[in-house]
Structure formats: structure tokens, C-alpha cells
Length: 158
Image (cartoon, rainbow, N blue to C red; front, top):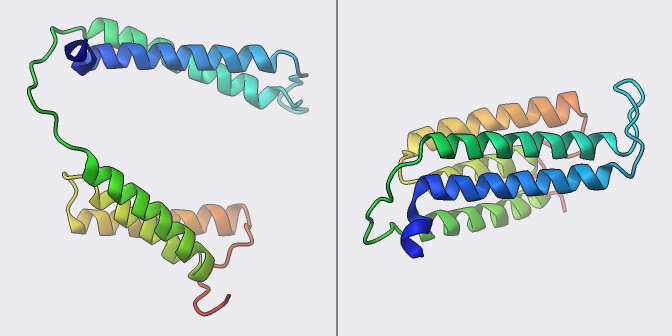
């Protein structure tokens, strides 16, 4: 049983089935609400669209897993993913603290940089560049486009 779960195509197949089931479930639940039109969207429009998109992605993943079905790979020891988990958890904590006491830019930089360093393939330089780029995107999207009332920098403000 464990060997079957290690097979990438098997995991993709199961993941595709889960996406398909969740998407269909969301679409069925959204059917009870008025969907409306693109101009006059009702409360069921977004859940229905999201459910359909999830279901289509699930079908695509199932088809891709079927097409790339290969014999199970023999792996004795799986690489530990504890480093990634720890970095992600620390990044979330840093975002919460820096979001409250530092502002949007430091919080975004921290969450992206710390999370990116959890990947063994990333270097510090690539994590830094990614974090800076995401800070620019966050300012453009959340401050300029959405006009979110989240201070960019809030050092010393409690």
C-alpha cells in the first residue's frame, strides 16, 4: 500500500479525483442560489464558477495521470520535508507579527523570503529576489488596485 502511494501518477490520480469531487460538490451546492449573469452576478455565480474550474482541473489532472502512468518507483527513504514545514510555519508567524507591527511590505517580504528558503533548491539570492518582487506585486495589488487600508510601513505604531 505504501509503495502505491509513492507513485507520482497514483498521487496525481487521487488528487484529481479529490479536486473533481470537491468541485462537483461546490457546483451542486451553488445550484441552490441564483447565479445571475456576468453583468448582474448573483450569490451562486462565484461558487458555481469555482466549482466548475476545480472539477475541470481535476479531470485534467486525472487525464494527465492516466497518460503518464509509469511503474511504481522504488524509494527506500523519502527525503524529510520537515525543513519546509518549519519554514512555512515560521513564515506565517512572522507575517502575523510583522503585519501588525511592521506593515504590509515587511510582512510580505518576511513570509515570501522565509517560505522560499524552506525549499532546498532555492538559494538566498533567489529567495531575496522573489521576496522583493512579491513586495512590489503586493503594493500594486493591495494598495494601488484594491486600496486596502493596510499600512505599507508601520514601525512603532501599535
